[in-house]
Image 1 (spheres, one colour):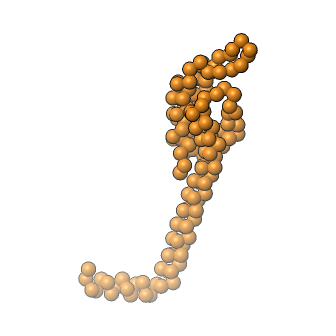
Image 2 (cartoon, one colour; image 1 turned 180 degrees about the vertical axis):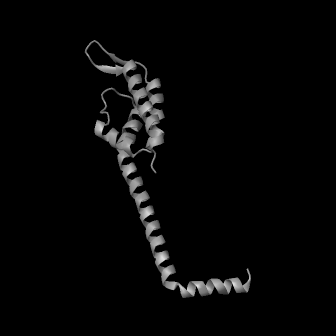
Length: 135
């Protein structure tokens, strides 16, 4: 750069020091706020995903009709924390695993419940798992 241009820039900053100080302060304030919001949203997502993820991993390892499903409110909170482009995919995958569970459910002569085939259930549950990865 030319020395004259650098001197002009220096003089401009020197003459308007208060303006540049205030501008830098507000840019820093806005950036800090934006980063804090991102941190809070990640924490909220991770807190909402944890019970769903624990249930999915437990069911993938050992599918059982006797296990407790996530509560409807837990699912709702989790779905609301998902980005809008992922909501339909997770809801579809969750509905698919529910359908596979219903298809595979059998009862023995004493009324006990079990799954006739767990492979398709595990496959359907595995499709839900990536949506719950920590952010």
